[in-house]
Amino acid sequence: MYQSLLDTKRPNTWGALLHLNFHNRGEWLRQNFRDILLTLNSLPVRELELWNLIGYLCIDDNLYSEAEKIYEELFRKTQKEHGDVGLAAYLLGITHFLQGRFQEAYHDFKLSRQHDLQVKKVNSAAVRAIAYMEETIFPTRDIIHKNQDKLLHDLNIPRALDRAMGPNMLRTIHKWNSATPLFSQGISQGGGYFLTLKNRQGQTKGIAIDPGYDFFAIFRDLGLGIADIDAIIITHDHDDHTESMEGILSLLAKYNDHNEQKKTKVIDVFGSAGVLLKFHGLLSATDLFGNREINFKLLVPGAEIKEMEGVSLLDKHGFTLLVNPAHHTERWTNQESAVGVIINTLIPDTKNDGFIKIGITGDSRYEVGIGRLYKDVSVLLLNIGSVEKEEGKLLGQHLGMLGCINLLKEARLGKPLLAILTEFGEEFSGKRQTISRIIENWSQPMSGSNHYEIRIIPADVHLEVRLTDLNIRETDTNVFFPYKMIAIDESDPEILRYRFRD
Image 1: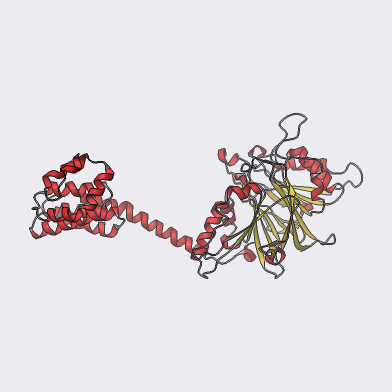
Image 2: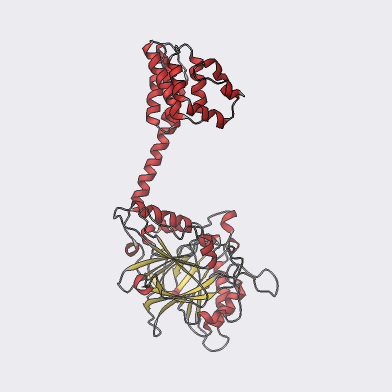
């Protein structure tokens, strides 16, 4: 009914616009705008109420370019009639601001302020608008530009693997794991491991493993960046093993869009079924030019993975993968589809014929025979998860203390082994070394040699293992010593320190 009353040439009918819904009003204004503007131009500037009726409605209905034309006309007409252009300039500034044209808006507000001063308006709306632009908008934009410049600078920092870590190194990139970072009372950085290996061409490659909470923050503290990650291995889909994955892939996309070499970096991702489901929308990512950024390989128990997209993994990254089962339920499959892995390297095993193998149990409960899957590894990353919750029962989703003991006895009874105990919840604070020694003592053979064949080292963010000789870096001196000569200092329960012992 109200729409039938409207006439573009009769301004006294325009009040009916206030009774129309948003859609119908906007449609009428768009369709009839040229005629409306002609009618407004025929009106004297003292009919400001009619100019503002249409101008305000255009602004309210997000018709910013139409509102801009209205106030440009009002400004010119007012200026020609030697009237007060302060309000017209201010409203023109509003239309420019809402279109994101901040410099033009700022100019309009200053022009409005100049005319307000001429007519003795001291505290006009233009004053507040100028202050808002100068104190909020422009400083915020400067911060954004500086952050963008810093990001571009960081993205283009050259690879630092050889300088910051060197080849054939294993570094733990976490402190506490599990869900505890969500309700931590102190420092709570979870996050996985970082491995550097030499490939067949002698190039140093970087492999991120289970990048969970704060992985990239710790990684950056080591002097490394997105350019240093060549492959990612993820044993299951829980957040404490995947939380940093999306951030890594986001940085990869930015790197590929903005690196100075104009080259597309591709990261090879190896993950469980749950990981595939969790990140399937990201795993097909491409750069601005349509090039693939990610290759994905599904980790299925029993599989031996030797290539990616037809290229040998030994040539690309210096490893192959053997996939083991892990008895741990993934969220995205609601099945026990988590995995453990054995990383077969090109590093000669000086004590045995062959090459160094690194075992990663992932999160798993103990099942009879699981330890035998890791009988040939030289280094075993052992996820404890928790301690026994009920008398006489093993845990249902994690190894726990007794599961670790049973697994180690199956894997290495009477044989040397370096086991890195990881996946501590914060309830282990101040007790990591004690629990490690209990597992170490109970894992030794009851008969035969009295010296420890299995050594258990609890993990923290300082732990670094040189894989060529299995020496561990002493925290204070940065000197590497054989792992059997490393003592654990837990005088500060928040920070483990690795020290030489005679």
